[in-house]
Amino acid sequence: MTSIILKSLALASVLVASAPAFAAPSDPQQKTVLKYEAKTGQYCLTEPAATGTRINRKTCRTSAQWSEAGLNMPKPTELAQK
Image (cartoon, rainbow, N blue to C red; front, side, top):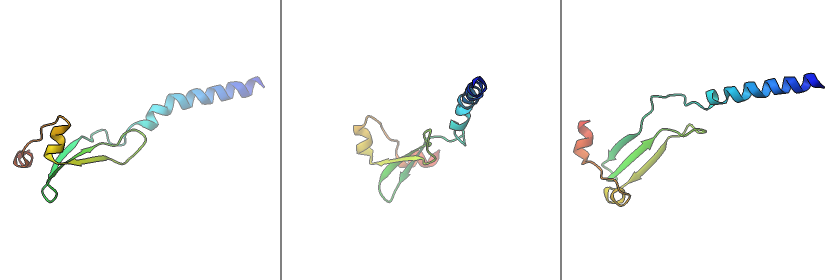
């Protein structure tokens, strides 16, 4: 009985210690990207995937909508120069 408890305790400690390794992103170099889409006239902000998913989060809004949220977007020509 005692050996089962010790084995399960050892297994649990190994799993807890390795959990951050499983949660680490596959590409730590991912960055937030801002692009202007001329077809729609919107600025699209692509954020790296959060922990627990591999899907990047993309938010597209017009310049006026971003201004309402408190952000001033650069002119499309300024984005092209970067």
